[in-house]
Image (cartoon, rainbow, N blue to C red):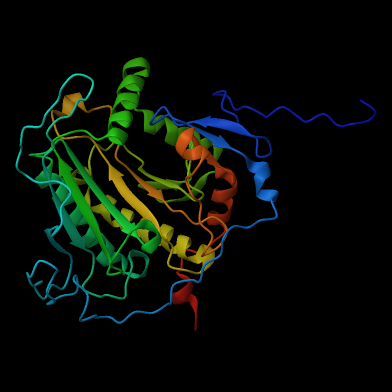
Length: 361
């Protein structure tokens, strides 16, 4: 060997999961059954990715050309009311329609009818705000709105997907603070994976999968960003996106409507702080896709394996203009990341809960 040092084998924790920050390794997503390739040594590459000009800061509180501002006319000719809080309306260009129509399904080429509704939620009448710039009391009203929509739509539809796409890079065509709700008569691919994995875990272990994950994460501590009495926000062990986040209630909860008033207040507080930390990371309005997964509609005895949780998937990697792309190997083989979840959590943990714009004199 002539004095050459041998590379150490990656360490494992007591669950047998690889935790090395230095060697390429794969991590298993307990929620979906998917794997992600982690290549931390690649952060030493000299190329830092394509740089693009950051979006100009500052927007008016009201934009007469915005389809979502109060009192304005939307693309379909309807006019918004002069709303002062949250405002929900049917999507003018929905991906799902309530009518069920027969579709051809023959031999190898299977298809099935899909029906549902799509709605838009305006978080605030102010055009210039985002969730982290809104007061906690107004974020609480958004949480209540999410819960009300899930409560209503889950009585009719199998799956209700609450989500927000923030920023042009995430396909958001209008900067007015808003999210969406798609409710359908089927269980989509990602929730179906989570349903199967959580059901299997409860049947095999007699415990709730994500509650066990929470206990393990609290014992480890390296990936937790912040906690309060009711919620924990962490970069999951199996994160795919650079600064991915998983937000969990600290008790067993099936759906958003099941949250108590105190838990909703605490969630609004966590959301403001976490989303402010995202903006603080590169001092930009941080783009992401955020959404809630909870128990599908149906008999509660059949969905007892579920635990309510939120996913946040942000694409930025090294700066406000350098993004992580899912291409090549990721599209053809499996997801891959360079920055480890532990490194991402450490960066986010070091940031202030106060938004950088609010901290300036």
